[in-house]
Length: 318
Image 1: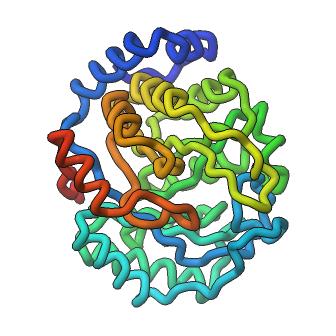
Image 2: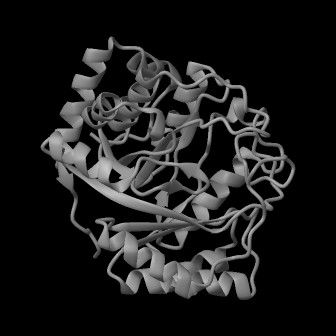
């Protein structure tokens, strides 16, 4: 049943169920709405790395922090389409492009992104971008270029948000999602756990996402990857079972959304990843890098799916 009227106490109670019971509920929903033996393979490329003016405490691309990630030139559309072709050959059906911008600015750089989107779609792949905030007109131009999805994560709860980011507000993020939706582009929005937030904060973030109407078509659940030089560099690793709980809770709340096992997967054992699939994860990011963060390699992922009797999902382009 699709709902948009969840209350925080209800979601917290769901999240805190005994884990076998929570996974059973999640798997029941997953079986009813998806092909549980299939996992969508997505590839993510940073097309413009570093030099971002935002102060997101988790991000090595912020110009405010001294990290190993420096500002780099923007890739050309030809370079990006070539990378997308390699990802397609390796089995990916969705190609995601990230630019370290606070907001989209009209001009040659944005025109290049539009060309990248067109090129990826011409390969027969889904195209997703994450570019920061954007205007109604820019969202419309992305839609006209054929963009499949726009990623703009809430990151955390409204209450904890100011502890992580001060250069834009929680409502700024919701407004961006509204503009994307109005343009007819599907929404990709999730969050990060392990930044010092409470369990209630995690559940509050899911409440916000689940009460959007319609639900985001894509909900990435990320575990913080602490990066030297950022304010969160010393955070303890996330317990894999906490990630499983978040995926399972998201699956129950948003039955038809693709819940994506995203950043932090490099630290998970094969068994932990399979628990995430059992909890309702429908997608993984596939390839060596997730923006600027390491990711399991292609052969390891192929072996994991093969050994579990699972397979890559086919493309779902309309």
